[in-house]
Image 1 (cartoon, rainbow, N blue to C red):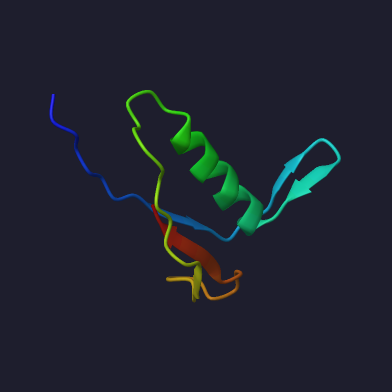
Image 2: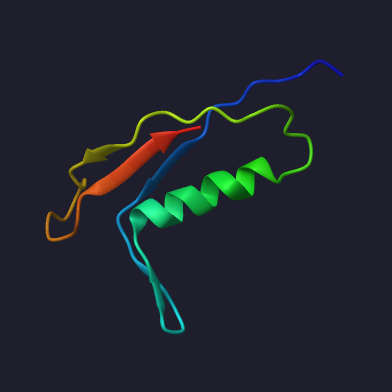
Amino acid sequence: MMPRCAYIGLGSNLSSHSGSKTRDSLQLLREAVQGLARLDGVCGALRVSRLYASAPMGPQDQPDYLNAAV
């Protein structure tokens, strides 16, 4: 089977609370990339774009998003 290339957009503006541990958007994006790297069928190293911030769409009373492409 020929290798396929896929591009995945990631974004987060939320904190995740797990017990007493709080993870911010940067940590959540890191965990997402690590999870993708562990998937069956992923060959070679994942390439990750620079991180960038963007204003939220819709209601403006929320934090900016932290985004990346993998």
